[in-house]
Image (tube, rainbow, N blue to C red; front, side):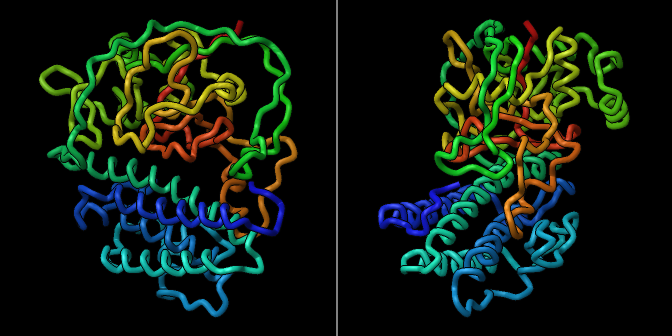
Length: 425
């Protein structure tokens, strides 16, 4: 994750202090445009209230940094350890996840006071010499990447909550739009057969599930030059794909019928035209932009319909590893996917939409979960989920790297998730 040395240089310490203050401030800035009522709502079990995200990320620093590295630390409120633990069994009991929206107390003002107190204590701790400076720095770094994950979830979860309001309220005003962009024609870029290395390189931060770095053999394949667009998804809909059982995996077809899927999650027809609900309210779909808010079952059905398949995560990483991390991310303040830029070669591998792969979320060869409570962070979820790659318009750019593995259950649709096609050669 970081250097094995026990010492931390002044430069590294100063950078960490600055990053801590900045990243904690970003969480607060993401709530602009939300009322106190918005921030307590929980619209489904998979989503959490904004207020809970603000408190949980604070609890993480209190539990794993202050309680461990500050002598005689006095907790801000003893009840918060129960209310804002997420799934860390080794830390203690916790409030039931489906009931997070019932926590009208503490108030949002009390949660913000909690954030200020913990921020001040962590900042003070980082400013002082510490006998376990390396462990402290490493744990704070994990906490910052954890906070970035929750910043993305804050946006996707409030989007789902607002989508349940029949008036289709916007969280923010739609930013000024650039001139209309026409996506490049769908094409496939060939990739050579060979033995490749994938996984975290050890340069900079990575989560334990991104390693160990290892060799993987790939047969020749081709990746689409861009993500599947809304226009192409419309053709899929109009061809009756949501009524064609032969395109779907059995579990996906059963759920498609049970929940009567007819289009991506936030698509709505108004006056005969498709619109998409987003953080800017209900807007006409952009036919050139990547389709999003689809689940694994839908992505796989589209690939079948298109005569292609989903890429493996190994194929995706090999293709993306040599490319710069550039795209539409959270910091761009344009929280809806944009059309692919004109140009040759692979486009949109980073940002805009998470790309489903056909790879189950499983341990790499030689994987061992980290020791202690933080080891519960990734490894115990390696069952019945699929990997997504590349980040989205709600993902902080600082968090992205070629080896980053996101994962969700195949039925889940509320993330900014889309797809890129692949083919065997």
